Structure formats: C-alpha cells, structure tokens
Image (cartoon, rainbow, N blue to C red; front, side, top):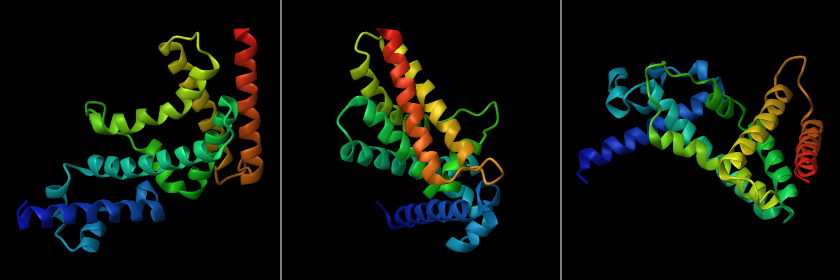
Length: 202
C-alpha cells in the first residue's frame, strides 16, 4: 500500500469516527459534512473523495453500531441461562440496554432513509441480517418442526414486538418508561410470546 493510499485510508477512518461521534452527540439530523471536514482537517469537498455520499457515511457508521450490538447480544447469550426461552429474554433485554446506552446511534439505524432509487449495498444488508441469528437459533431449538421460512417470520415478528416496546419506552416524551420497568416488561412480553407459540404448537 502506497503512502498516499495509507493517508487516504486513515483520513477515511477518521471521517467515519468523527461522524459517529457527531451522531452520538447531535443525532442524525446534526450530521454536517462541513463540520466533519473541519474536524478531520480536510476541505469540505474532499469528504466525497473518502465516501461516495452522505448515505454511505451514515451506513458505515451504522455498520460499526451493528457490530457493537452484535457483540452485546453475543455477550448476553454467553452470560445468560442456557434454555432457549431465557436466551431470547436475555438478548431482548440486552437489545434494550444497548439502545438506551447508545440512543442516538441506535436511532440513526432506523431514522436514516435513502432515496427510493438508491440500492442499499450488500455489505450493509449483511450487517443487518446477521443479527437475526441471535433470535433464529433459540427459536429453531424451541420449534424444530418449523421450516426455515417459518422461523424467519417468527424471528422478525419477535424482534418487531421488542423493538416497538424499546422505541416507545425510550421515547423522551410522556410515554417514556423508566429503564428498569421497561426491561421487566420486555422480559414478560418475550416469555408470554414464547409460551403462546409453544401452546399453539402443541
């Protein structure tokens, strides 16, 4: 790798880290390329020599957030109860805790919208979809007769239910729920959903 290419890669990494810090402190709406360029010491137009556009920059930050979320869910699995149901409870609570601790970066994952004619790159889709293995594996253990397609739908439904509770629970308005209470409610929801699925399967 040439020195020029090394400098470019370092500047690109600095840009992504600066964008991450800016989103964490200001939210997605506070991301300004002019401020980023000033922080990393380059011209404003030079930002677009490092990434294709703002969408790519946000997706790169999102990729870092998703990898840290993946680590948090893996740690919860390793530290939790061995039963599939309690593994699901553990990762649901870990998801809630991660969102609370990384609120603006977590929100940016869902607030970012690309134009309709723009295609989300494969690497970004892969980073998103690989997280579902945390839900899919315990569901497969609980419901071995279900097809992969059925398990995939159940995994997405369970995620949607937990995610919805986290979104509302962490909303900084009248509907906000104290974190300990939110964690308890999420655990109850996951157990109730799994109990219901088991009963229906029987």
